[in-house]
Length: 220
Image 1 (cartoon, rainbow, N blue to C red):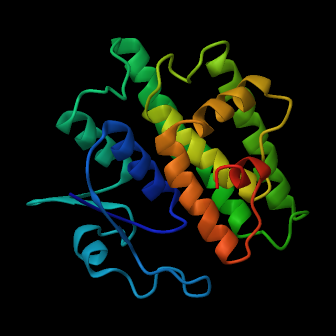
Image 2 (tube, one colour; image 1 turned 90 degrees about the vertical axis):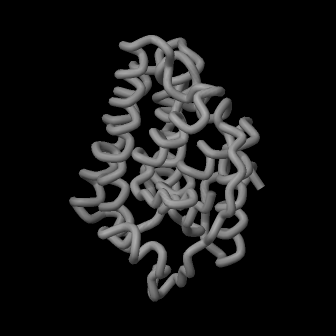
């Protein structure tokens, strides 16, 4: 199995963590990345497999797929144990919804902040930060007193951990207003698979002189 990712790919990191949690052996291929040009030129396998021209891409013999959520589903079918979706039908549906919301509801606000890093007081940046704060409050309620977002450790936790990591990097960190989420993040950071992938990203950021939140520095 080959996973094509990138040194600063949130979606690629999700897939790497999941594969490590499953104990699935894979070859990690990092697509060339440059701070000025981004992912240019594109990796040829990424161009061939993904019409969106983005990582991650998974190649397993004659199977070639893209999109982190679709890759999650393949990994779960490939190796059901340990399970990364809850066994209960309703809990599994909630976990899938939470994973989707991390990618499609929360992360677009972080993407807006990426485009406004030099203008943190811009009205659009402030709106994005407020939207992220509101999302954290909803996630605090969803988590409650549970150890993990959907009760048991799942892809929902992997997705939101990586998404909030980028939120913290780009000016929308979680705060003491969501103490359960902060404790959850500590639990996530202590998992070997999470630490391996996010720690590698932290070392890459350090190598290019980029700032990062304190919890991320502790991963190295």
